[in-house]
Image (tube, rainbow, N blue to C red; front, side, top):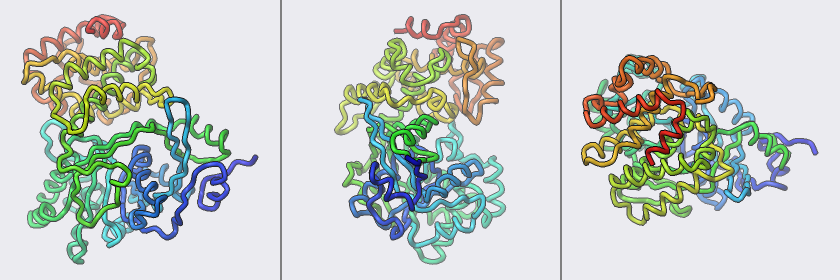
Length: 493
């Protein structure tokens, strides 16, 4: 049988063997503009919209994707060739794979090529929500102070040239100015990133940016624009060549960039939207007054738990999170971190049994069909650890709680950044915007055990906490003097 390229013209043919959109995509209005189209967005928000469309809902809320960087050109080119269609492959623990073509994205704007087109779309009355998955680093804040980073060259350029935007802040601020001038209500700005208080962070960054040039406009934004806090969850590994081959071998469908994910999906949202929203509650999305306890639970347990497995896992030579979970030492170490250091500092979460939640995380991490690579989990650790792990450490320092597991991970991160090879001598794939800075300063550890902690933007004043530095120094010496990180973890259990 001849292979079928995924696009609008082939949907009827593909639908004979795989579930495809039942709705007429030509009739949809793109009420959502989404910045940062990656795997997670396509397994989460875009999938929620797809399900609503399958049920004859949300016709005013299809999605126009946006790429702000030259690095987004590849996904733009592929999605354009495929009429913005893609396959979502839901990997069940029992080996079943549910593959479905998702059609909720109906356009994509590559802003580096057509910035005016993006402004036009953002100003359009059709645009009711601008959603974001731009990773922690995309918010342009100092991870220690929480303040806006005005040293960013793109930001400096935009402040001098407000009608020629480059960043999210420049584009959305210019569009909101134009909407205000035209008496069009502001769109809601909806963060879907794993940042605690993501809506508040986004709001504060926009206000700082705006106040730099127009205090009155910033005051209008503060009073008028909605920034709901959200908690998002669905493990979505990087797409592999094997995923593409699976679709060809199983369905004879050629999808250049499918998405694979776990069955679990969760979204908790504060119900603050300025121009309405889709009926997400029909799909089990929780709308709450305060998302804080949910996001703190998820970030401190799931996201930090991933790093607790991933960083020593990379040093040991484990390639996937599944490998780590199949290693009883790594699995036990993570659970001890969750039980002894995270759970004591969590707030009460209505409707959640923490023990059951932690057990569900272990089951999800151990899904044999979700072979999430350690390199992806460790990517941008310089943006993740100050938000996911270090706050737990700081709370336990204040409360005189256990700090040994979090401290071990920071010491391991120093070694990982310094040596950049695993215990078998294989090069570790490190994906981090600060990787060279981390490497250069961690190399000084041989002369100064505390050298790594001098990066104040990551560690704040931890270097001045004697209880922490005493333990950190001992763990650094043990990690650097042995070639068996697993043995050290086992000793701590």
